[in-house]
Length: 472
Image (cartoon, rainbow, N blue to C red; front, side, top):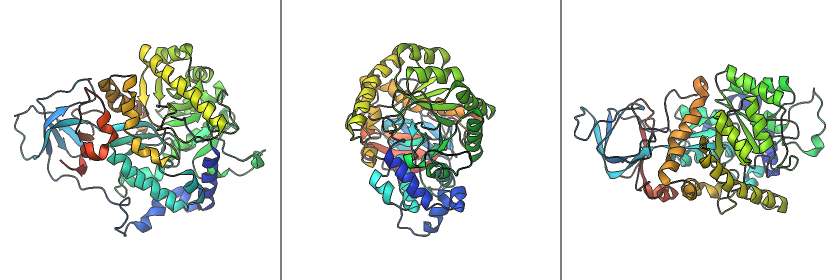
């Protein structure tokens, strides 16, 4: 699969188009202001209030439980849900008073899935549509795809860059249906970096010049020098970022930053890390090369996004320092984000070959590994969301892989600490955790192929104790 395409020409045109229509009020109020006028119309499935919470506790019975904490499936327990939390795991036959009983027919009960590298605003729109659409349309597509994401079984996502704050708020307030969003806000980039979407005609920029289109709409922010990086990081924290995203290396689709480039000096990276740590959270960086990875880790970065060109030295440093390796299945296959130029295809192939080596090193060195997809501007790939997890059984046994996409990813998102918008555990089924539960027709001890067809195989989808789908 092709790596992050957020530095491409299409993204730049999207930002120009969106920003041209954006008012000061829209920038501050976000998507909620754009979609609220539509709430009265019942024809839009995307703009719909979430289901009401059950009026009494819910007991899920007759299940095979994968709790996210182990790599086994067990029987003999039920799941008791009260409010938005898992209250208990009572033994079969243990009496529970005043509970609504849901017989799951011997099916698998598992935690909701988590995508640790997701672009909420840009996953469901094509390049052509992005260049020709109104701002309201872009937000409405994002709202619709948020609901579709939840109905594919993804109850939480870590947004890796983009103006997702307003959509997150609308979901949290029940205006829109979707997963929890852990927002990074604008991707912070040096001049000429992977998040610098300006045209050549906009160069040079003087200190007093206005912000670029992409900066004003909150997709990216250019910052040079430690002091400027510090300011931009603090701005995203002010807006509600749960973690900070920096660009520390080149990209596949970018026109101005070759894949092998190293971006941001160590003092600049340290400034970002210091600001994030002062707020009790962490920095994640887009980077592929060993040099960039090692520099980022020395500066205190806690999550390496991509990193498929890492050598063993860089991989061992991740292992030794306890840094997360957030890998994506970039395998240049049918699930790849579209790339047509010869240069882009060559980069894509280089990264695909590196992906195979990266997964093997992550396993051999026991590096803390997260999973995400980075689907971007390729809406036809959204249907393969679950498959992009299932196909990684070429590297992992299915139970280990499912644990990565639930408990492991939940642990990574939990590193946001007090900056997390959601106060509770995710990715696990245990007392006190959020009641994010899937009831599935499948056997993860054999494979994860059942996730490729969520519409058929996910019989019940619960988030926060509310049931969004029930076809039991």
